[in-house]
Image (cartoon, rainbow, N blue to C red):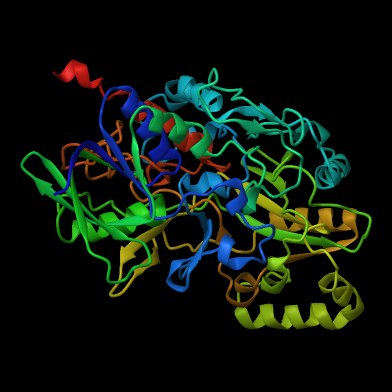
Length: 518
């Protein structure tokens, strides 16, 4: 082996970045291995039509930040790169409602609401969370919907990870007493989810990872881990270069390993290791996969004077009940790629009935749909309504012959047709003189989409009820941890980045400083 570290972290998203900084601060040698690449503001695409810079398909040379993964029961949107999902997420940092802290496999292990409170506060500080005070067209239209539903008091502005300052003005680090990188004020271009080209978005490479590198953390980009072998004194971690099919395998040693590759990275790797190197991993592995019970609905307006693209990715929120809320999501002007991947919104459990409904929708108002599909700037005239619930619905991931597959865990498949979400979409469509659309797969196959896949390595009291303990340690093995969305052990019903950050902050608080072990 070339070298041995105290900790090797697999993945550089919210869990991996927090782990890297806190362990480096405690005096440990740390290596972070990330399959994606480093990105500077100038590396991001101007619009999502530049697929080579936007999408992650390394086999054909596309090394962007946006990845789509398709399963039998779910389509998943995720992020790739140094900084993980922070590069492509919508900057939004909400705290889940109370139901999250008292449900799921972890509910009896602690008073989670109080236990996590100080770590949520620290996560907000590190990520630069501030309340959005800048509403634009898509937010104001949501406010109108709230008024007509008699829910104006439930319309709110979220806390988001954006440096506002003066638009386009570069200033010294405003967050960490000058120890962080220079920052540029947000100009509300709406490009948050294709990669902020100005440096206003508080991505992990500008806070946790930046500070971790100053403490000596090494970050190895464009490499992915293929194996973890137990040794007498730790583990051997095997990895190879991303997108190089015949690249030479390399090995490094570690006294401890933290799995932080997100559900789509951590769970497949652990399922592989359970069949080979780590057979004592709990049989709960891959279970309790959740999707926030999401619905993603596009609403395209025929109003030419509207500009849905201006603002931050998510600038407002409408609480529509005890368990659900709605957020308008925007892309920057010109980012109209989704135009080719959406169809009129319909709802029916039987695919044949859906197709008939879809065709009838086109036939009964052809001119309206021609106007919708021919809008000149799709992003300017389109909002993506993100509806989320904290109600339960679970899947299981299993290792198939050639790839990972999903199976039903409780007999009920996630639905692409949530009545409340669709009713809200029609309300919004009326407000903007538009029509609601959904992803092609939802109309044709009934498979829902999510940007927040969670679980699979949940907490439990023991191996029979969970994969990790309440300190994120893998049952059955010493010095193996899971710190990412896989560890989320109930359905938060909100954007999960803040929760992953807070839970990892807490997990790292249990690891003593290195000098205390000497």
